[in-house]
Length: 288
Image (cartoon, rainbow, N blue to C red; front, side):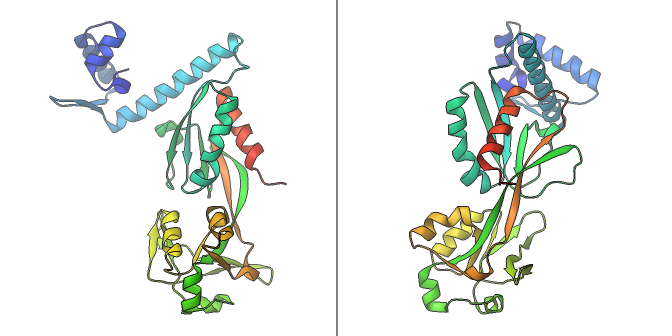
């Protein structure tokens, strides 16, 4: 309660005890655990790294206890509670977030705590229920359910193509300004992916501009006429349809990257989490 409300006084008021009683209880807990859970100053308190980990695990344990009580009490038919969801950008922005309103219209008692980032997470330490990633972390404790294969395309603004010409082969790319997307984990540009004579081919490109983490920044540069850009089709399909961007090297398209739904093995999975998993698989999963 102290962690959620941000202070001893607020927690004491909520619990109906004195701030001193709350402070003594936390001190006893810190002594028993052998770590400091809160960093204290004269103006405020905040969780330490150990405190954040402990708080996340306690919250997860409490959620499981509440879910178990609902099951025993016969409430299992109504999913409810908070689902903590970690999403990559921009897949979360373009593919997952638009579906959550549809889910909420059917399951009004389920709430979402959504975090968007391209970085890997610690399910236990960060307290997440589900994550979507383009690459499955090498953690055997996670279950990975494939959602879909997202196709990548190469696009450019019509003005750029009039000025620089239209590439016909991958070899032509060396004569073009190719906007780079830099992978945060490696700090290196991602090679562009193509299908050439039925084979998957990766091509290193170069250009004036590079974008770290934010794929949509590259789209903005492309729309301004800065160069060619390889990006997921679902991000630019509306711009292509409106004629703001033109797809090039269409004869070499077809490459895709898989996105998967990740969650840890659990003996007891809350109904609200199972319901979200089933919904996302039903709405996004590629045909087998």
